[in-house]
Image 1 (tube, rainbow, N blue to C red):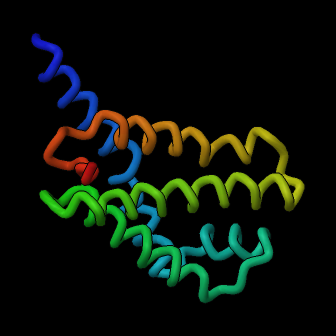
Image 2 (image 1 turned 180 degrees about the vertical axis):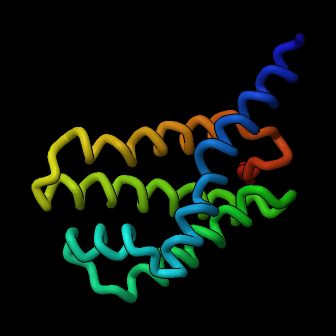
Length: 128
């Protein structure tokens, strides 16, 4: 197998396990899943944040998976970065400990790998 093919496979694997996995979370947040509602309440967030975060997660997945729109993809990756680092920080600040706070950071590693491995057609070309 050549390097380009390996990189493409690695991109799709990390994208499915990382950013695309937000479909599940987005659905559970928008439908106000019991566990998600309890978790956000524990972290001190109001219930309406389930809807806001859920919609953003679903829109982010769409932005990353559809072809073209590289600037939109950059924003989606940035959104996932803020979502996941915010989740980790929220767990730390609420006293959940490092083991719980590390869980979103595992997904963050997959999101960063997906971003780093994305093919040229999915990258924003700088004007310079």
